[in-house]
Image 1 (cartoon, rainbow, N blue to C red):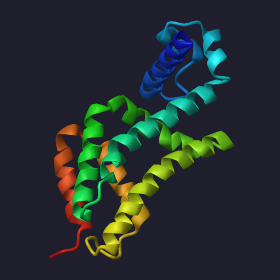
Image 2 (cartoon, rainbow, N blue to C red; image 1 turned 120 degrees about the vertical axis):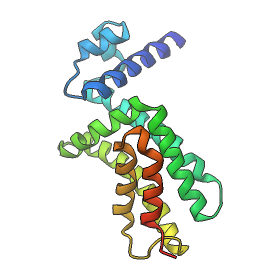
Image 3 (cartoon, rainbow, N blue to C red; image 1 turned 90 degrees about the vertical axis):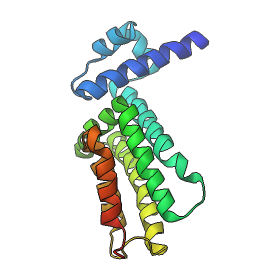
Length: 186
């Protein structure tokens, strides 16, 4: 059983690596098999289709992002400490998990344009992550730490987009810009 688990993990890691570099449409099952060092037929033993394989890679990637970014916020504390912790965690994620971030950023737009229940579920999974950040923004508004006229969803998209797309050398500057733009003037 353990060999089976290792083989499945090798396939998932190979798929993640290739999907992050070239996207879902740019990768074939043959290439994934080659990268994993297995026969293509073995991939179909574990996953019924390329879409099913991508679904699991996507779910795991979002889970990884949520755990890295949102898990540290579980501690109770003042809102501004949570916001700073969120931004720091996001910056750490951008710096240390480039492959996962690249996969998510590359495919989230493609997912939104595809029409099937599987792709809709993938989009919903990403939106759940953004909604959790929107909840934090709402918390800041209720605590009167953030401007009351902020739209929580737009602000969450702004945070995610700002930190995901900026050059690594500018992350701290963007973090400060985000904090200054969201907080109420003194």
